[in-house]
Length: 87
Image 1 (cartoon, rainbow, N blue to C red):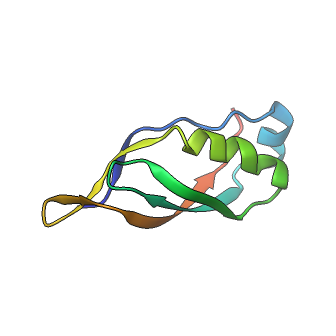
Image 2: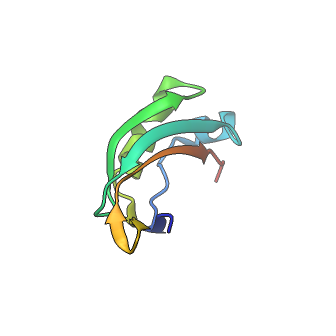
């Protein structure tokens, strides 16, 4: 069973960054551990370095129902595409 995030916090970006990079994507590599928390977060692609810190900060607060294999929680490597949206 794949992991599922019942809680997600969206990054807090300035209005200027939100509007300038609306619909652009930041790609993040991570491991979701067997407790449902991110480990080893790393930005792989980003339209601008200023976006990385707030996105990583928000992702560190996400929680997941962990992935399961044979009914037991397991760690899982993931690539996430975070699409930026102007508010």
